[in-house]
Length: 530
Figure 1 (tube, one colour):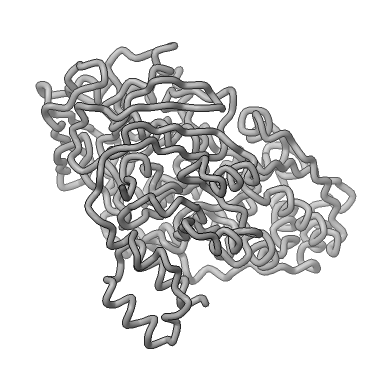
Figure 2 (cartoon, helix red, strand yellow; figure 1 turned 30 degrees about the vertical axis):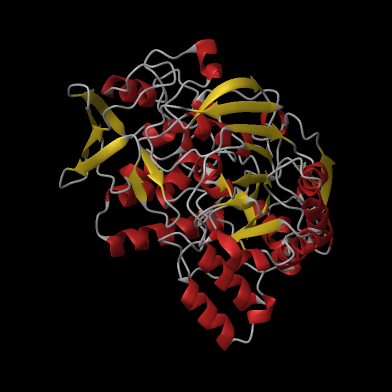
């Protein structure tokens, strides 16, 4: 079954041809086991057709949500943002940066100065023509001293932004960065009209394939196709309705009864039942998404690394992969870099469950009598509460006391995450190591959800960013992963596959593992069969 699942994923992502897929499954004797919808359509789907209302339900929405790109946190508002806005750069399904609002770019020999040519003839939804000034304003929104944007650490290395006429933007960096185009693909760095501020964010003004019609934070967004969309072969639906439904049973029932065309984050315990239903396609893709348990290391007893190591050894992550993910995932190793990333440290020993080591470190940290409060809600990720309860049972064998506090789903990201001492969390990951570490681990990062500071880590991160020699750069990122594994303030137990479901009336090309919902661009990339 493992071989079949891997081959199906490669076929869906376009990494092998239909002929190669059929040849390999025949050689393995697995031809009778392939899902009927796989060969019928998606990788070899017919030419896209326009029309229809696409209705989807996504997780993570909250009544505190905003369409200010700097504050986007969940699947729900990230997806909506990409419906109405574009970036300078897009990440394709093979993790390559490709031009979007930027027509092209080039770097100086030391990768410190990057010149982007802006695509001509693109209009915002209000009819205003996109110019270089809009790009500069949009990126500067995240750079100011008073900015509260989560992308602030990503753009902090930008020393200067200047325009040359209406179609050229020049970025001067403090130091070289070979991955700079990747940074401009980050979902926070969407392009808006110059001068956008205050309540204007909630209008969703952009150059995207759909125009905002109505927006109810944490409830519903409704968009219509942009009749003047500049991208050929994209934005095929007439209308898109995006619902915030955090309850997986509600999402699943809505899909089964035909009220939805797509849902994210299937209930893995019942996904086999969905697989048997005619008219439903299950999509599995490995990406950079990971589940985590961040602890605030500026609070006792988490400020002692012995305590942190004790908690890391007190978790049986193999049981979590088997029971929470039902095998749809891989072991995490207490750092955020996925096996699909370029510089993944495959030589770092996998941390295993060891109650004796856990007790040793916890005793050394003087916290055997402490009751650890682990906040959890399924808004963090599907199965988060069950995972926390399992962790509690694992820790008992080491004499470590964990109290699981079940928090409300609504408002979890604003009331619990980075506020309570220890909690369940998920990250959709980033396409490069530097982006992931810069947004969540670097000193001063607003989404540093452990408040962790490490001098050598920060120095290596800066050096690796500027290193153009891939071998040297890889060695630096390997050490960075080792530092986080040994001293970081986060337990990362597993990397789940993106397991999602859609009506088989939905057609699509290769599915991206960059982020969920086809890189959060399913509304733009997919279409109805008829």
